[in-house]
Image (cartoon, rainbow, N blue to C red; front, top):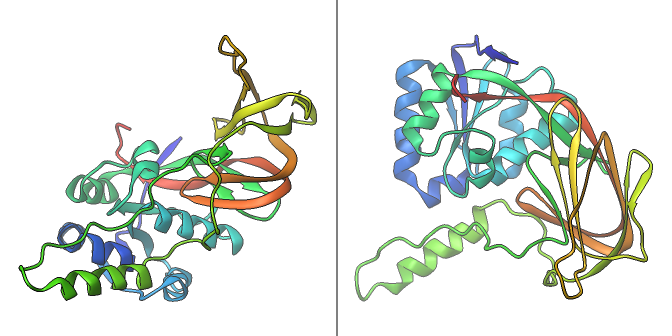
Length: 283
């Protein structure tokens, strides 16, 4: 169910990685938002200042200008402070935005900023694990290798390569990112026990190629397990339920944009309509 956002006072939090990656899109987003609402703009230098700005939002509606990691960070902070249910979020994607777009946020600074001003809050389900981590869009075991969200280098005049080096150094320093793992193994067969609401879908004696979990609707998660195929392709196993437990030997997983692990056991539970995201009315 969608409800129209009522606050015309916005707290615009601009992630530092967005400022470095695409300053022009950031400027456009600020101009559109400022023209349509009373805005307070925050320019945090890192995750700690990002968290302080969000925590001091008062009655203002928070708008995150940044990539998928910035969106996940905001949801995680609100969840861990038990403020998620009462705080609707808006986002203008700048940088890697596959997650935001999959949730219905328009691509492009102008369209996304207009959706912040004219859209409606839609309640979405959330996966919460037993370590208080959150999953907004998709969970994958083992984590598929993807390219990191690294800003493209700016054009520099010939003979001035030090400018490019300095820019890359700033991106690495200021761009928030998870703790680096020594190496993320390429996906391969795993022996995992997958339980849905306490019932075993696949056990340790059946090697699997991949497990995926996504928040569905009305408090139910959709689970797909791909058994290891020998010869003919094996038929995926599909199920749905309110909680998903995975047990195995030191497995890693990708939750949205972040890789976590290794762990030997993790349980994810669906929280129905746990958070609100401003989306276009027609979405």
